[in-house]
Length: 313
Image (cartoon, rainbow, N blue to C red):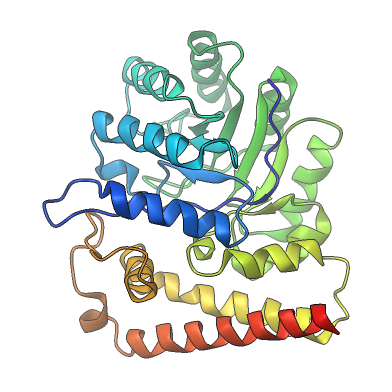
């Protein structure tokens, strides 16, 4: 189980064709865009990928396609863990494990679908681990859908002690929780990677081993720069960039993930912005959202220019 997940881990979008199938050409371009813009690993078949709206065959095909397109240039982790019944979870996770992914990510609310508590969580976790390939690295994801199921310290320690887990995508959105989790997992292979932009810099300074929030679909390279320079909090460029990243990420409420697809359409990554999760025109419903996207694009370019100039100085 030789895999380490650290750095910038984009939560991948799923481009669709006009016929509502996965756009393989668009997916290839998207993978290249992530890798060209600071991604250290790729998180496929997650909530941003609209996994709850994908069939099992689509989830499996999507994971396999990302693995093929990444071609070993970065680790690929994937989830697709959406079912309620444990038997169905075993089937979908075994199928995902067979795609060639480097790590398989378990969703915390699926480990306790009835919100029954720690004993149910442990029991379901033990059963799944027993059914999955013994050499498959595992991850944890506090996916907000269908409900956000945060790990207790006891549960996190239990997962740590299995020796199977290499990453937790932390969705606590609380810096004190991140600090505590980093301390709990210190010295283990289990990396805590925060997903909340508002606390991203503080979390990095506290020991979060990167970032895996939704705005890795807009400017992952800027998060990569912040992570590489997390010890330079007194640098005005870093300070301004951290503020921009936190404020820009508030656009998530304006029809994500479709608004991210609109961003990529404008970049030329792919053409179709269809989403099975957001089936409305985001620019029509969310007033001035197009103008907001333009501000995000302009400021992203401005910060990239400033970073390049600083490197030349």
